[in-house]
Structures are given as C-alpha cells and as structure tokens.
Image: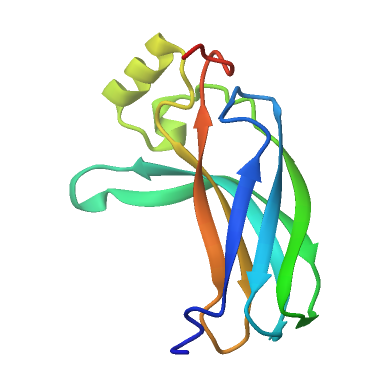
Length: 152
C-alpha cells in the first residue's frame, strides 16, 4: 500500500440530517481497518470554515473548533469498531464586521438575514493519527437549518 492508502476507512453518521444552532449533535464514527495499525489515537472534530478578508488577503479560517478523543494511543486491531460522540452546537451571535473580519456589506447582509450560519460551512472530521503515514480519515458536511426538521 502506498502511504497508507487502502489500509482502512472511517465513516461518520449523525442522528439526523439537519441541525439548528444550540442543539446537541450526536453521532457515531466507525473505524474499519484492513490490518492492525499502531496509531497515536482516533479523534473527531467539529468546526466551521469561513472565508475572511478580500482580494489577495482573502483566506480560509477555522472557527469554533471542538475536538473529542475517541480512543487513545495503541495498536488498533483489524476490523470495524464504532465510537459514539456528541458536540454542543454553538449559538452564534452576529458580531460587528470589524471584529469578525467580514466586510461591512457582508456583515450588514448577515445581520439583516439573522442567519449566523450563512457565512460558514460546518464539518465533522474524524481521523486515525498514524505516525509517519497518511492518516485514515473522513470529513463530512454538517447541514444547518432554521427548521431542523424540514418537510420533503
């Protein structure tokens, strides 16, 4: 296997497809290894990604990072294991444009729409930290809605 590719997989499942701010996000991360692997640990993160600045100064920042250690440093046996997790989702206050680095117009639109999640994309990312090799992991989008139980 080249650089750890094909050594296993990670899956992330959440209790429901949509969440509202302030809710408790619960789910399960599954680690499936083809062979035993020594690793520093298996962890999961919840975070937002937002673009700040403009022009050549525009860059991606991670915001409100929360992390949970699902398992410790050890030799992980081959096969599948499931790990339950939960994160308290933030209640975001619309901040002044200068404090957030968002342009004045974007800050005004954000304040008028009263949708604090409109500016960021939110993710869960689980990974097995393997020394001197490519980590085995998964990054998954978390969907937010003002109505967390939308009708089809």
